Length: 374
Image 1 (tube, rainbow, N blue to C red):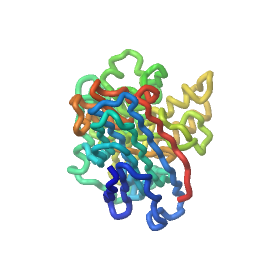
Image 2 (image 1 turned 180 degrees about the vertical axis):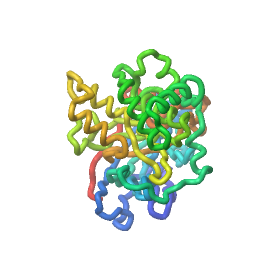
Image 3 (image 1 turned 60 degrees about the horizontal axis):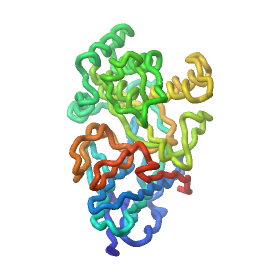
Image 4 (image 1 turned 90 degrees about the vertical axis):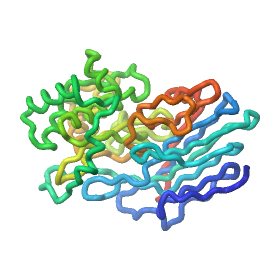
């Protein structure tokens, strides 16, 4: 199929696609951001379904078109998406909950190579909220914040989650949204730990984390726990699912990845405080520094841990690309109808069933990141 499609995400962020021809040219200079702290990256995902059937499908998350922090300042922009899927019967952008977007590709001919190449060009710049400044007139409506207070199957707000949230905030004497969020952040850093044996980024099942007896997990578990505890305390909060795209400029080996980023997915979190807007946090990465920065591990009192702890309540180094905020979502058109906890990895299925997104060697996908001139 040689028909070329041009699909428009927005006036500033075109999505170019073709089912059988070479990848189109890159974004024009008019689509590039001004050079005020922005860095641009090409993030290329390549998938090859070695198990070719007449029912091959893949869903690949797309970066958020724009992510905005405090005061309305953007810290991520999607400049362009290009894809090539020769032999595919269908290739289109589909939308899930919470504005999650993904490229869905389908093959019905088992005799052709079932491959897709997707290239996203994104511009990123570091994000920080000035927590020392006086609160400003930044106030979202109750309707805007309501989705980020609700319970979900993986993030309940009652039972042990609600009880834990009440104890944390009461022990800290926290009254404001900012105080509650800081108390929860400090509690996770002090009491939880990164469990290296957990597959991928974890499941995000926060009730299991609290009842497991060891308070361990990966980023989707620990930052997901922050979100659930914040919501249980009446503080709007949400996960942001994404992938690391570059090494850390602060020298942390554990908080960056460049080149082959096939296993560099990372979930972050943010909460809403009236007068400040959405505030970035990442307690899971503090625990990652403690576990992985050196072979011996680092104590909480180590200067590198203390620096990460201070930075990651209110700031993100944007060597990371965000996809979406979607939880417990069903893949559009999937034959296996059960939901996935989050959309952070490529997903796929054949006539034999769903593929293992956490095993790129057998699923046969790779993700690579290259810094480019903006």
